[in-house]
Length: 308
Image (cartoon, rainbow, N blue to C red; front, side, top):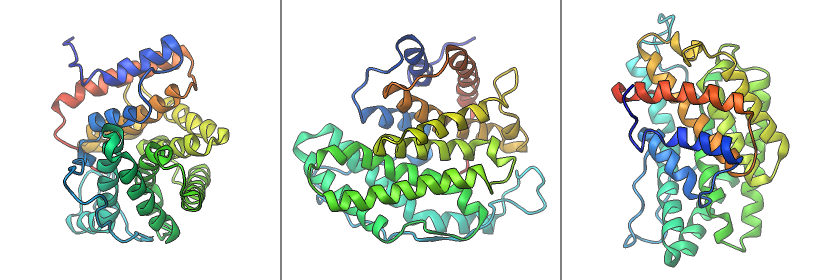
């Protein structure tokens, strides 16, 4: 078997660190940026340059999401994109994704530049406060919207978690933001425990919800959120085949490999955060997951991209 590159082997190293020590000795905040930059190429953001304005103009809050599937209705394995529907979904999520890219760049600068840290943190908190106050994502009109919006909540919550300590005041804004984060975490838990389609409960979208709830758990210090995230991991991992693949992703025809990799991103980020904060898995679970991660990382050498 060919050796993995240093970048490809990062998730495996994180798992080994958890198994050996029950935690990861990395600077808080830098961890997720490193994992995300490796796993989520489609969501990579360029850090805001230091000579830009201290706070860019953010997109208006996305309150309503009302879209169906990206795929042709006649596609039983959901592997044939409907060009018009796919473009409609992209347009509906455009502002939210642009917002997260801006937040990500600013959050990276908070970690990298003490000189800019306070100004960038204030900017992030102001931007997220505006979205929270407006009730971002409070009107989810379709099951597809409910299933796919979790990654956007996770991205916003991740930026907030990384900078909330860099702004000692802003108590009122923080209270509004954290109430919004709690409401979305509770909505996701209730949806995935209840009305979510049975097969979706076993796949990558459940893992994205678990990542969002993990971020909420660490911000709010909510143990029940941690328990739900870990239980979601176990629920999905219980379906894995002997070779480490996930059957509910393998049924996706020509997109099967894409969705295997798409499941890897939130799983690894969530587990890394939990381990870093001293929440532990059994050694058996870590070994099984390492096998699955290795399979998908090797596969990613030939993967041209992925869909969300």
